[in-house]
Amino acid sequence: MAQMVSDQPVAMVFMLLAAVAPGLAWIDVRSMLLPYSILGVLAFAALLVFSVSAWRAGSTESLERAVACGLVVAGSGWACWRSVKDQVGLGDIALLGVTSLFLGWWSAAAVTLGVALACLLWWVAFVVVRLGRGSAGSFVPLGPAILFGWWTATALAVSGEI
Image (cartoon, rainbow, N blue to C red; front, side):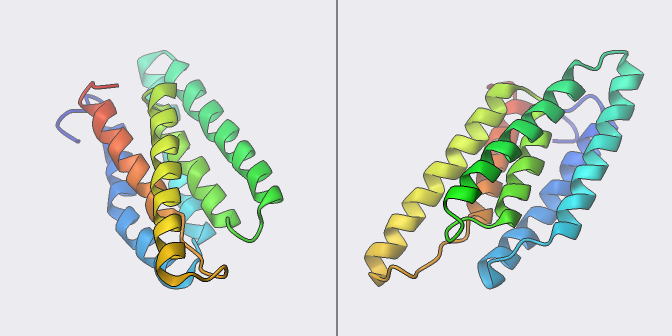
């Protein structure tokens, strides 16, 4: 990714999320929690680097799109959380907002793809768990699905496919 992205600070912040992603997925699978402290640092780092990059480029288009996408997805996720509190946690919503902030740097299409893939993968996992366990109380962590969607959409955006 660092070789394909012309703006090195932006590449570095994407690599930061890429480095933290496996740990976040593991934490979510083990404890069904996503630490706000890590998500907050990721969001702050992205906003700082994206702001500096926009200032250096003399254009705020990517920054504005990233912030708007992050806020819209997090806001929509919060509305979803209000209606299905037992299946989705606020950490999942925060992770959706952070990954959408990152993907929004590339395009709204990248955000749409990332969120759609996350939802699709989670629903497949949910059905498999329910069929396998048959228990209405079986929870499926959403974090790994969100991170899979982010990885896939980022790879496609960086390669110019979307």
